[in-house]
Image 1 (cartoon, one colour):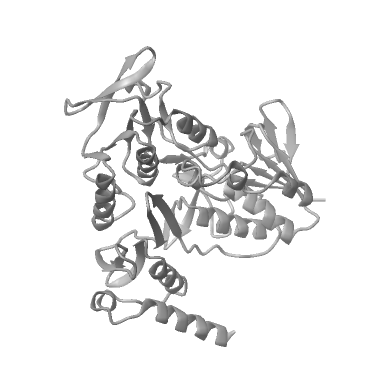
Image 2 (cartoon, rainbow, N blue to C red):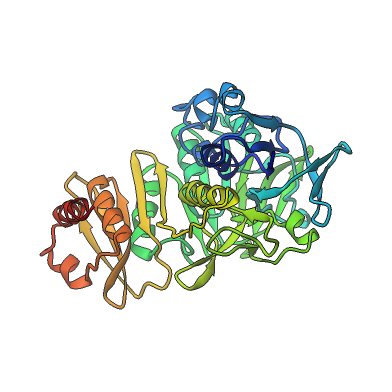
Length: 414
C-alpha cells in the first residue's frame, strides 16, 4: 500500500486529503499538524469568528468524525523537524520517524512580527494568524481600550473594524503612502478609508513605528518616526505573511519567495508536492504567490490528483474577499500589472465596483456590496472572455447577461 504524508494543518492540507481519498481509495493518508487544534479556517478569524458570528465548530475545516470516516490519520501537536529525501522519511520533534512514498508540503505561512528592538515582542503586541491569536484578542477587546493596528492591509483593516464595533478607540498606522497599497487601487482604498472614518477609526498613512514605550512589561504607548506619540493598550501587527519554507529549504528543494512548484504542484523532487500559501507557482507567465482560500483549495485538489497518478495542470482563477462593518468586498481576478481603472455603482444603494484593466482589457474587479457584478465578472474571467474598458465605461455591456449567455453557450457545446 502506498503512503502519502501531508505536512500542515492548513486549508490546503485538508483539501488535499479529501481529494486524494477520492482519487486513491486505498491510499494510506497521514496529516501531520504542529497545532493541537483540529485544522480550521484562517480567513474568518479576523472576520466572522471575532465578530462571534461563527462558532468554533463551524470554523473547523472538517469535524473529527470526517477523518475517521475517510480513513485519514491525523497527528496533532506533531512538529516536523526534518525531511530526509533519500530515505523518504520525515522526523518529528518527539523523535518519531514517518516514511512516505509521496509527500505534500502544505505548511502555509506565518505572520510577520514587528522587530523585537522596537518592543514588538511585548506580550500585548500581537499578530492575527492563529486561533490562539483570535481568542486572545477577543478576550482583550474591551470598550474604550486603545488599540493600535500596525498595517493597513485587509487583515489590519478587518481587525480594526471588529475592534471599532466592540467600542475600542482604534488607530491604524500604515507605513506606505496609503492603505491597501499592495492589494488594491486608490479608488478602493479611498472607499475603505471613508468607511473607517465613518466609524471613528483614525488612519495615519506614511507613518512608521520607531518604538513602543513599556510600562509594567506591556506596550503602553508608541513613538512614530516623525516624532508623534500615541497611547495604546493593545497592538495588532498586520504587516503581511511569509511562507513557511524552512523544511523545504533544509531538504534542498528549490525555494525562492515560497516553495517552487510546477503547474502539476510538483517541487524539484518528483516525490514531493506542495500547495497553498507556502508555494511559488507559475501564473500568467510569472512565479506567483496566491494567498487565498481559492488557491489553497484548488491547488491542493490538483496536487492530490497528480499524487494519485493523474496528469492535471493547475490553472488558477483567483478570488478573494474581505468583510468590514456592513461592507462585503469580493474580488475576482488578479490586478497585477493593471494600467487603468474604472468605477461603476451597483444596483444596491451605496454599492460600488472598481474594474481593473491591462491594455484596455478587464483583468479584475473589486465589488463592494455588489455581489451580482462580482459573480458575473468572475464567470467571465474564468471563461477568458474579453471585456474592454470602453464597454465598462460606456455601460453598453450587461455583465450578468453576458455571463449568462456565455454559460448557455458552454452548456450547449457540452
